[in-house]
Length: 135
Image (cartoon, rainbow, N blue to C red; front, side, top):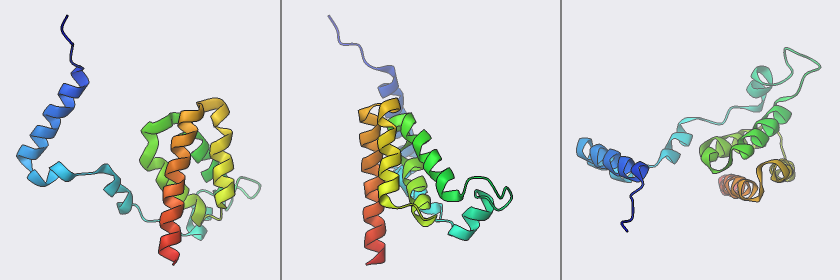
């Protein structure tokens, strides 16, 4: 019996070879670099745009970002970049690391342990990077 190849793997290999042919530097390309193109918004700006500046009784930016983080955790491992960016913005909006961990942990009931674990790993990366920036 022959071992059938995964057509998606073949497609990805072809795309990588094509990218290398167009630009050899693409061999070391990482999508994570795009995260650095999106600067962390100041807390005051986030409150104006996402917070309760327009709706005085609405949710503040920190709460909205924690809800976003919960939704991204539900998507599992496919949301690495959005999770890292959201954690970075949530910290800027005043979320404590414990609040971020609890938000992600709560999603274990709905998204499962693997999704929660991956999101916690990504959040810890961001928090560790932030600590290094402050030192």
